[in-house]
Image (cartoon, rainbow, N blue to C red; front, side):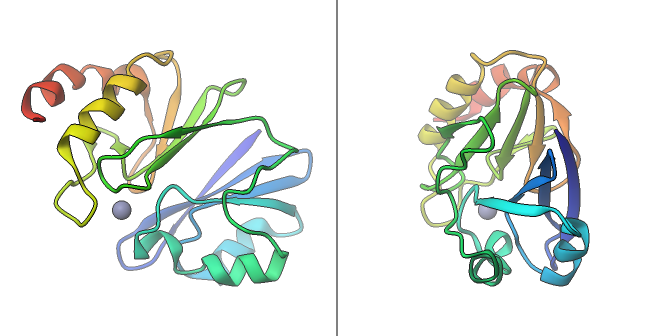
Length: 169
Ligand SMILES: [Zn+2]
C-alpha cells in the first residue's frame, strides 16, 4: 500500500491518496481538486473516506463523489480497515485504521505533537479524553497520518498522552 500526501487549500489540509494494486482511496478531499486529480493520475478510485466534515476537509468532496459515483465513508471492499469513532475535535471525527499496514488516518483528532482544538461547535474535551484513551490501546508502531502537518509514530504521540489526560476535563 502506498500513501501520497497532497497539501490543499488555505489551511494546508492533508488530502491522502492510498494506493493498492492500481486501486485508490481518497482521504479528505479538502480543496484544489485539480492537484488531487494529478496525484490520482490513472488509478481506479474505489472509495472516499472523510475524517470529519469541517470545511477545510470537504472542499472537493462533492466534485469527487460526482465524478466517481461514490458516497463518502461507504464500505470499500478492496481495502481492509477499521473505522474508529474518535470525537473530541468534532462530534463526527473518525479515525481509519489499516491494521495490516499499521497506519492510521486521524484527521484533526490527533496530530504530530498535538491534538485537535475543541473550541469549535461539537468539540468536547471529555470526548477527546475518551478518544485518546481508546487510541492509547492500539499498537505503538502504528504510523499516524493527520489532517494537517507531518506524519508521526503513535509511540511518539503516546508520550504526550499523560499530559493530555491531565489537562482534559
Ligand atoms: Zn477540523
